[in-house]
Amino acid sequence: MLFASSIKMPTEFEFVTWISDPLYGSIPLTKIETDVINTQAFQRLRRVSQLGVVSLVFPSATYSRFTHSLGACHIFGQILEQLGHGRQGCEEQAKNWQKHRLAMVLHDVGHYFGAHAVESAAEDHYSSLLKVTPKKEIGLVGKERPAFLRHEDVGRQVLRNDEELRTVIEGGGYDPETIARVFSSDESTIFSNLVSSDLDADRLDYLMRSSQATGIPYGFLDRDFLIRKLHLMDNPKEKEDGQPAQIVALKRSAVRAADHFLLSRMFDYLQVIFQHDVVGFEIMLKQCVIALLRLGEIKLDKDTVIANIKENKWRTMDDQFLWSRFRSVMEEREGELTTLEQHCFERLLTRSPAHRLYSLERIVDDKRGQDFAEKEAAIQGAIMENATSKDNCILWSKTFRPLARPNNPSSKASDDDTGFEKAIRIECGDTVKPIYDMQESIASQLAKSEYQMLRVYVFGDQDCVSKVENELRKCASDHGLDCHS
Image (tube, rainbow, N blue to C red):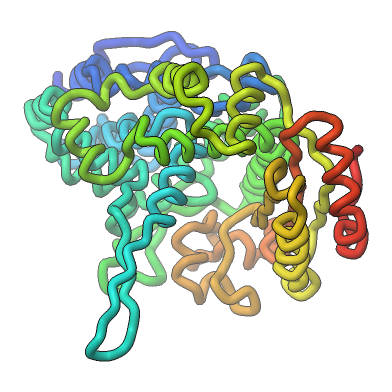
């Protein structure tokens, strides 16, 4: 632990378990935290990978959401200790410390198997099942869709409906709904910025742990220095409804360390998450999951997910469950798959990367990047107009902003609720500013920029690649895409 104390603590807040960890040496846990991680709902996270298909490109990137959740809990506890809201304080502070540690250890308990690609696939699938109902009286069309739950909402349902986990939390004197509101950022508290922002406990652990697992060195952060420089300040927005009296801010001397963290996070995304083969495998995974949903092999609508939780089936729905479904479909229902789906299943199950044929990647400011949508539409149109391209390739597009920013880029972030809530806040005398309002910060320039990416992936054989290259050559050239044939 970074922060030790000889003050006698209530038994409830004593550490009773220590778990060895490659990042922190050991992670200490209280009795209720130990009971929580021993529930079957939480043990499921051992079998849910944090990085999904990244391990198909970076072989050692195999750590689980179980490990990451413990790390996020540990970091959050350290930060609260630094802020004087730790277990050594009064009973109320110690309870608050425990509540937030529970929220962090449980923040991924509702995560879908197969990482974010599965959640994205399910959302796309249920969005495509729009039910159109004419409203005759006013001549309009109303749209409804099967309810879909994001993983934070699934987590809330797990806390509500998994009897074993709910009993442990309530037995320790805590309210599952309150815990869920904390990790879902449903209410503004002093510590909201530490739960979800550009510099929060989740991101700190993720970046360091992923750097170690992938072998990419961008996650070596000055963690101890950043934590030491956090403190509480009066909230300039205190008079607004629902705003706490104090907020967490970094001392100005930590601006460089904060810049380093933001740049490290940006490079991690560009070098790992958006690495071209990783993206290709993510596309395959998403297409395969959509096929499973279409064929009824799995169901991830709201009602089914809640029923699975209540019936304890959710505990078994992990990465192994997903990959077994993939193999089953290829063995028993291959004839029901489209050409593109067959390619994706075959390549994913044999770890055969897709071919990145054309790509455009650039950093632009708010004024120079306005033709991106036009380029995307033109390439997509060319793909749909050509038979080989339509059946064998996918256009992947991404606009990546390295950090949160104001809704209105021309305004100060401090005048924008979204920017201020998610920003790294810096102490400036007796007031607080978002880091990108600081002229000496690199973030002040990053906030004005975005990274735009267009890639055409081909999933067929080499003959198919050649045909697609011929079909798309002129359009790709006209719009500045490089060829990788």
